[in-house]
Length: 132
Image 1: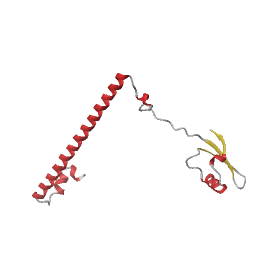
Image 2: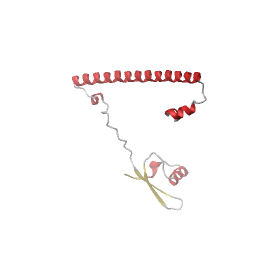
Image 3: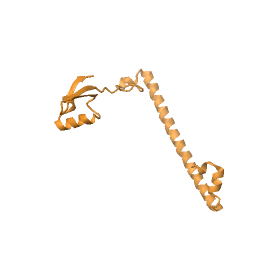
Image 4: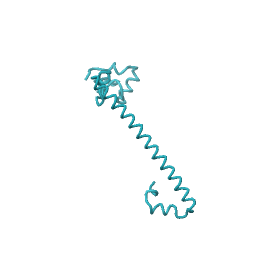
């Protein structure tokens, strides 16, 4: 693409190419360009038809006094917030030292906490001391 973007670079690229071969390349490039233009035009027509359908539906909804919320869907632009509960976890190590960690019931936990859970055969919920 870098070489084809400049006339001077293209001259260097095709300096040893015969005229017939160069004409064949130009013909193929013209065909590719035509196909690309047709493809873009088709895509624009599809988008135009879709937009006209959307506009017609909006007009009908306005006439009837209906909104998107009436269908039970949140309006566009409104995002549903994730509600992840956070907890304070605590466990005692073999030597009696206490370890605390704040997090949720999902996701990664500290390595020492994961090792404790595996060693003791417990679940995270068994170590909850406080909900945050």
